[in-house]
Structures are given as structure tokens and as C-alpha cells.
Length: 109
Image (tube, rainbow, N blue to C red; front, side, top):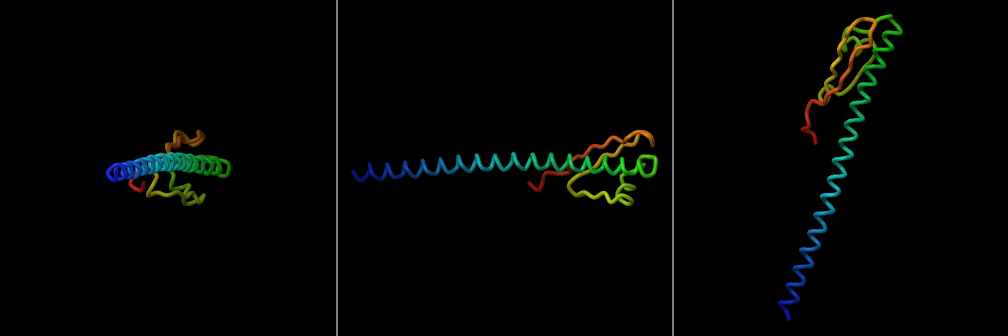
């Protein structure tokens, strides 16, 4: 009888641990999903800021800036350069530049 009680008790503990780890896996998956969406939104915000700064420059000076550094220096553009890189490709002074934001590394996750 005592063996049956112990076996039942170990089964309950094992079941509890399994349920705990399943909940933790679901929770972790949810956090990763939210983190991914947040990073995508942050990259879109950076791209929008670069484009808006370039358009402001065009409206003010009559030409799109030749470099991203010009936007940083004269229009106050800021972003986390350790986390993202901005590809700023100018075609002509009167054509809006192509802007692409890339994530540098995933070490922080």
C-alpha cells in the first residue's frame, strides 16, 4: 500500500513539473514573439525618421542630402548605431533616397 502511495505521489510531482515546463515554454514563446514585433516596429520607426528628415531637408534646401551624416548633423537624426545600420542610397538630388534599416546583431536577446 505504501509503495502505491509513493508511486502516485511521484506521478503527481512529475505531472506538475510537466505542466510547469509547458507553461514556461508557452510564456517564453510569447515573449519572443512580442520582442520580434517590437524590433520590427523599431526598424520601421528608424526608416520613417530617416525618410522624414530627408524630405524635410528637400523642402528646406531644395535637394535631398547626399549622406546620412548630413541628416545627423543638420537635422538631428538619431538612432542606436550599435544595434542598427541604415543603408541610405541616393539616386539624384531630386529623387527621394532609398532607405533600408538592418539589425546588426542578435546577441542581446
